[in-house]
Amino acid sequence: MKQFFLIVLMLCVISFVSSSNSGEINILEPYTVHIIDWEIANLIVHVQSKDNDLGNHTMTIHDAFHWKFRRNFGETTEFIGNFYWMTLDNQVYQEVDFQVFNNDIADECGNKLSENHCYWFVTTVGFYFAKGSPSGWVLKYTWGN
Ligand SMILES: *[C@@H]1O[C@H](CO)[C@@H](O)[C@H](O)[C@H]1NC(C)=O
Image 1 (cartoon, rainbow, N blue to C red):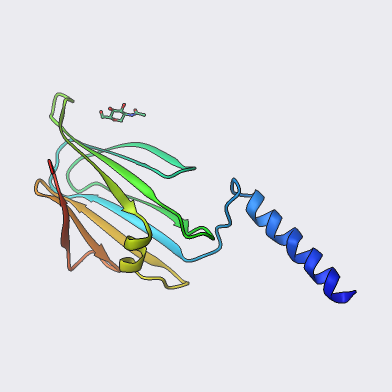
Image 2 (image 1 turned 30 degrees about the vertical axis):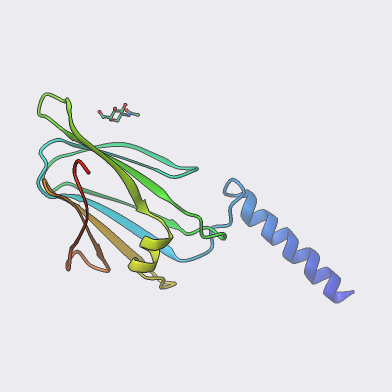
């Protein structure tokens, strides 16, 4: 009887947690992803996941933004970044899309239960990645490939 009660209680907790975030259970490792514009005078960055659209961020040289989330229970959390290198009169000069967060990036970033930081550093060459702190950059993508 006691076990039955515990099982019912657990099911209630699970359904409460999952209903609070459109069917997904976000209880796993916390991540902060940072996007840093290092060299582009007019950069538009659009980040979105399946259930979260962060909208367009218009950035100029040395602007940065970040967002925080937890991985979901199925570890299917993915964020896509659309990067638009704009001319000064707001025409798209170059455009690149890639996943700024997914399972592979999570593995590179780390999986501490406290806090994990992933950095994307945008230059006129492309997109450099670092984990933990903004140093030790590795070029992952270039514009126009
Ligand atoms: C974001 O900016 C891009 C590039 O200018 C544009 O194509 C897109 O429509 C914008 N999206 C929104 C929601 O404003």
